[in-house]
Image 1: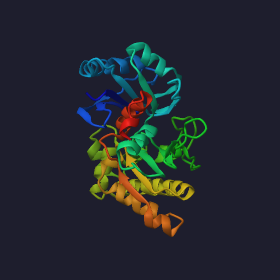
Image 2 (image 1 turned 90 degrees about the vertical axis):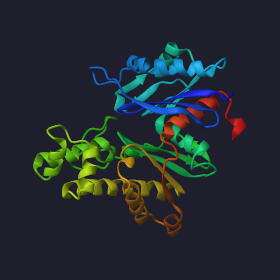
Image 3 (image 1 turned 120 degrees about the vertical axis):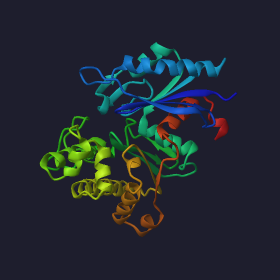
Image 4 (image 1 turned 60 degrees about the horizontal axis):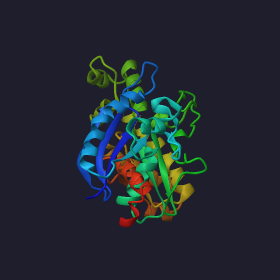
Length: 327
């Protein structure tokens, strides 16, 4: 029987689960829960573990005599050796010993890493990146960022935190404080919360009566902005067009710097509109430096319903010495 991993992806607003075997096959369906938060605004670790508990129990029952493996994906900077959550801005975690607490609770072998790195790993091992040498994973969701595969290997940089192009400072006069602590990071202009913030401002100013109508007295969210954009609401059209332009310029700089062959996109914002990624791709191409890059760069959606989950499973199989036999 193939070994099983319970893959867990802890994002800025939701936690996702999937049971995945060492051949990259999903057993059952992916499930999702809201991330529980404490009153101080930080994600509640014990609450997360309580949500995990029944999934761990089911995975252990299906694993039989072999111990269940845990593959943990977290939306921030993680020390893969110690499991420490060094900086997870959207969960308001700094220097949290998450790995130690995870093992103390479940006593199971685990691998833990940043979600974007694991998404890139999933694509490299089982997805569209298999066999490629130089590509980048890009997420646009609650946050914005990515991870690099260079010369056929995950590239973490000196501290393992490379790929944080979402924290490129734009230096615009209306910059707001990012979850990382800096002011005016591009993430604060292009991710889901930023789209919602700009939509709320348009509704409040009277520039978008449609967004006011869609909100119905509640707060505007990113989905409403996309709905208004599809209805050709001028304010929503401008919000999404500006977001596309900023993402495209940022990523064109990444491609120009590293001469990449592929950009793989995931995240809730990317999936919110079927025309969003083609428009981003067209705008990236227009900002590329060389004829060769404009000719050869591919921009595609992720291979899986959640690439970070598949990468989390792959990481724990690699750590357990089980994945090499099928590569």
